[in-house]
Length: 356
Image (cartoon, rainbow, N blue to C red; front, side, top):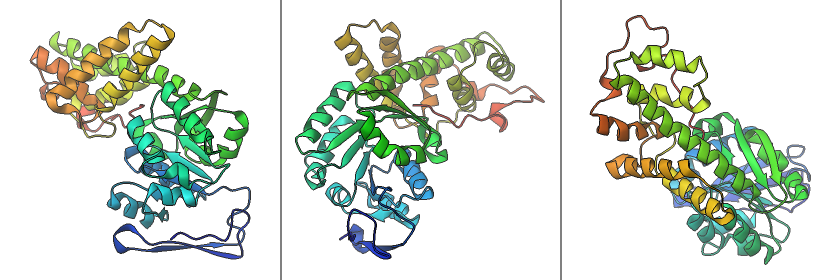
């Protein structure tokens, strides 16, 4: 069991231990001066592509997070870097002032809160920070459930992808009361480049994330469509990439993703499967507020097609496969220009960022 001497300033030597995961035990000694009453105890549930990097940056910035994931190996990896491993979501909650949640979907969030016992384990006045992309209506539901237990909430979805999580350069979009944000600002700033307070209401952060996801998805699909058009018209893709990335057609998504499309690099830095989920939330949000979103529907069909072709677990760049199959072409099979200064197929300006 993970033990602490209290919620305030620890004694000169506080020992936190957590047996549990497959028989291993980690003991972390916190010396006097390394933790103060102003520094909250942080928990993190979800150690996937995003959560792993978030945990690393919490540790790097002096927050020895208590962590849990349904995969014991993910917990062990995080513990090896200094995190405090826990056997369940409830165990994280019992020993945290702030718990960050970054699972895949709202179904997972609800299960963590209720079936896994997180809400019941949290002390009154604790805070749940929902960082997964779940939609504004779901964020409001989390706030309602938490309020029944005298627990506070923020919805704080992030943008920047796994690369941003690793580098600590995420953008955090927060919905919730400003006084609650202030109690969580330290850990949020530890994992991000900037924290944006979108608004005071539950769901405001998730609404901003939906706007972000709409733009990112449309940019990705448009980049794939444009590059396949250029290839079919006989253009050299190296020159085309250089020209567009230097002009008005450039974007963060174009610059980061097109090199991967040209190389046929579909490593799962961020996966196609998230986009039908997120675009579905975009459409339901738009329906609720009666906003026209033509491109969201088109992008959803394109990503659904990519998933149907078997690319759901591949990286975002694999959306180009939809266009390649229809055009009967493979960008990666086309010859690169000799002597190209930027040849994405040959280790030039490779895009690392998937900003989802």
